[in-house]
Length: 416
Ligand SMILES: [Mg+2]
Image 1: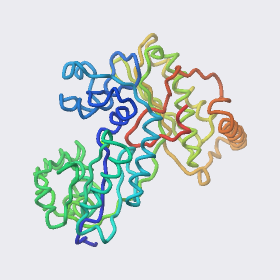
Image 2: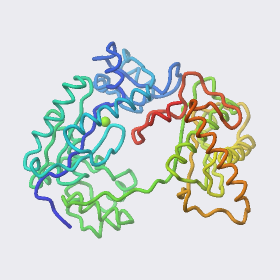
Image 3: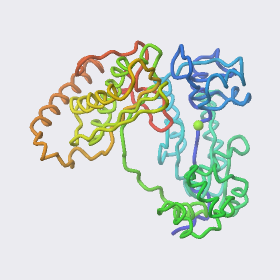
């Protein structure tokens, strides 16, 4: 395994992305504490993101509204603007790409790049150049933090650690000193479960983690990820493993008018069709549909339904109906649902899937897929919901499923 001599990777993260995009688009929000909420007229929700000005009051992303109001009474609550975030993402990526090729887009506001040989000894110039371009082309409202380090994990830690003007350069010889003040919980890849196991193994600091044997960490993690952590934290060039798609899902915090079981059922139909449409676009089929409901009935209800690998709307909606049949039987009538999630699990590539021969439904499946294909073509041509399977009641002006997400970059096709 290679140990780079210089910083080779750049990690860039836009600061307070959702709030700064809204401040950028609406000048009256600039310089003010802003909290982004899922939709207007909310009762008991939380903010999903907040501006730098709000953070100064102690407000954090994903904080319940009552607490936010107590910390910062003057906070301006602003509904999410999915389409704006999507456009801003594309624009900002193009701006960064004019300075350096992007190696991987990690989320809606994070990316990483491998830097050229010329920049490795002193990447500060490159970092300043990117920041200068953003300032000139976008303005001072959307800013970013940049970290340079020998590998991606260290570059991400350097980036999150801030540094002077949000620009941190970690050359290999300084990595141990820089790392020693980073807490274990702030290292990407160490969740609460792993943290607990590390403490039990008497590894309580980043220095201890760095000095632990790769085999030991493998044991603590329970898989090869521990060994990879050991090499990455010690500055080796360790490539990210390709992650396989595991599911397509959509979730939604429900607007007040859609919180009954019956109204929520309509919403989940839309979520399911949206997820299925995204899945088809990527050529996957799913063997399991999961419906999750949360609300005022003592927590969370979730059930899965197995299907023969399907990708068509009818197959997915049929499974959803079965889950709703179960939900109606198991949940007390009249309850209030606050959030609904639908996800398509157990994926296989449509071209390689195993059809369920026992069910002998191949001809039905093929016919339904042909119908779905025709519907998709019509919708692509004449507008996203010109034809649908069954009733379609979309909460007005509220784009279901096109919610904001840090990990998925919404596409224009999703904004309907
Ligand atoms: Mg960010």
